[in-house]
Length: 453
Image 1 (cartoon, rainbow, N blue to C red):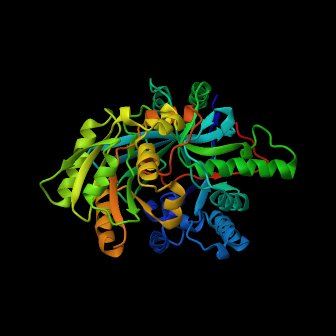
Image 2: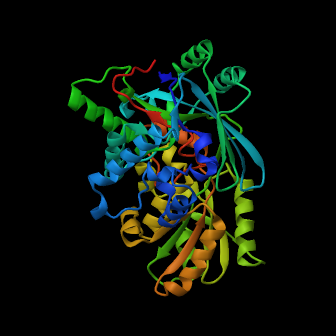
């Protein structure tokens, strides 16, 4: 089902830029204003100047914003700062990193072009919603620069590791490039150009679906650009670059694939004690209080217990910073409200994040998603210590509210697949695939007269 193809990657010339770490960036949508300034200070050729960040006021979004990126892209190519590979390749992309647990892993993936398919075709499957404003900005950048700056992170089923085994058998000894990310992870890229190997890998993918892990807006952007090209030119050939998008692909069964939890800090617009909140929750949850330590110890203990019980039910931690009390909450499935059961298929009802957002926050505490977003009543943290610090700070800063920190287990890859296969979507911030892939190691230049093969 999935059509993949080699391509001629556009890459930084190491002779011109010095350290690769000074020019590559995380994905644009995780770069805040402070990080943007730090990236610009590293190197005048930093990718943030091309793959523009989202830190811009609506009134400052003009055609000049995108034209400046295009002019720099053309200038850097003319200067030899960016070079395009002569031979089409499928690129092996390894990430060596330390998991927050302290264990070290290597995630093995590949970068290739993927034939575009509408979500309704069931070839490329999403698990999140996209938002029009974000897509519009990305379409304007992509249309102006005619270059895909970053890869979409997708998953594919490969229980026998056929794809990576084939690519690694033909992998050259020397990598093209490598870079260290902000967390100390090492990202390494090799080019595989052997025609027989490329054909074999393409054949393996023809019976697979792909599952977007990270980059839903970028994929929707590619679909919108193809639509725009059809409107301008009447048609887009199957082998046109506008009918393809650059993807990083990782096997679902890869032992180096990690999904981290995203913890939630909710501001309940009332002053409630831990006992009052607990009383509201007892009808649907079993509460086990964790005691006997500092707040860091309490949170660490509840996270450890959640990890031990992972897969045995729907559970998460709850910390009340105003009284320094911590609980583990376990869902009583037999006590689920009938309306909740009827509203959600099994694939969603089994997700901790759905139970938290739609049962606990919305139905029990009266905080629906729209209200949380409009009034800024919820925040997200991948680092539980950061969430804990902010929760404690909120006690003094928001005296008419009750901060409640909810500690989550990670969503399982099998759950992502089940939701996508059911044509459903997860709540916002349900998955955090770690580490992020870097922007700038590989880019895809689109030329209308070229053909993808």
